[in-house]
Length: 90
Image (cartoon, one colour):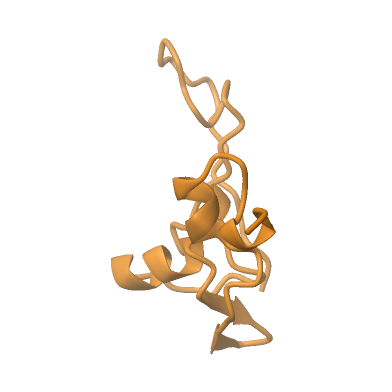
């Protein structure tokens, strides 16, 4: 199933990260931005699974949770602003 994103109508907040910041949050599973999986699992995702998804270790695709190799190196990129450590000269 596809993610269904939260949409605010007549939002009265001074600053809203969804309306003005473009934050994508799924109304069904609660995942946002970097934690979004390929498909929506259809239920609220527990915090440990959200964290693993954000870190690139877990994905929901084709109706099942799948452990993923961290091919993009997101964990390294958060520590090193120049990108994954494997891309650095040795």
